[in-house]
Length: 422
Image: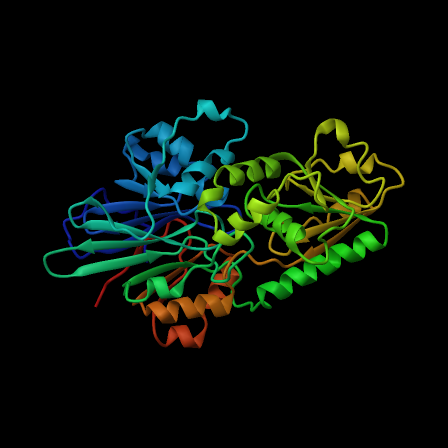
């Protein structure tokens, strides 16, 4: 490894490198520059500040591939496009539509389409000798794993980037299919390690535990607040509450606030891209907004906030909520359920002692078993771990079952990784 940024082009046809501008430690976002011979491919742009990509006014890559629409993988794309409007940016069809939610302060009509859609699975040739394939990665609608193939006169090199992946099916997204990747034979795998070596219960068990916790709160006359990201987890929880037998038919209001509601609307526009089970559900009742079928699901408007919480209800809201809205409501009891892996809200207990803050697990990424299963199925020469705390990624790289078989890398931002292929 070295701290040397890759050159603009390489005369070495067999040179493979990865230069991370951001590896997803904490809040830094993911942004990886891969070089395959003369070709420079930027994988994701989750940088809040893209100044490292603007050196000398030269585009940092020949093309950009965006794995999915979460901000830690995509929030820098608009600024990158504005700086280098000729730099091509690609993603799946669904991701191109969801990306707009990263800039809620801008009217959608002010953001001209800048991301081109690529098909699933079918190889796309960007230039002679360089192709890419997209595979559904689970985790979020539209999330893609990219297989890059670089062909020279002497041999073919392959690199797989998982982005954020999840092997299990969730309520709204089918999991990454290992069968679809069989036979791809990548030399290099860049894989996320969000949960480190943790092992999680089965998905349905996680769902049941969350449902039970919500039920307990409501049974003791508490309302439940779930702060969630704009996309993904909130919509999963809504679908869970709409379809779980413990809640079907319950006389209960579920309110959705802020950008989470905008995410729901975006999903509804893309319904034809969702699994058939979701489309079948939507044929019989509304996916999200429904005041007829219980539990009722409604968008929370500002003028309604004073009225909510008089009887137990559920609120899904943005992560950056102004908790004073709830502190001003006397004689109402709130339980805040936060995802285990997101920033802690425990300091709320100091500021607002009446809030009960608890955690739950509803995994959106592969655990240790899923990560090692993926790697062993692909059998690459090199594995690069990104997206997770340095401790978690180090724990994965310390697994004996991986150390004995693969070259393992856990680079920090700004550290060039050489990837010699034997």
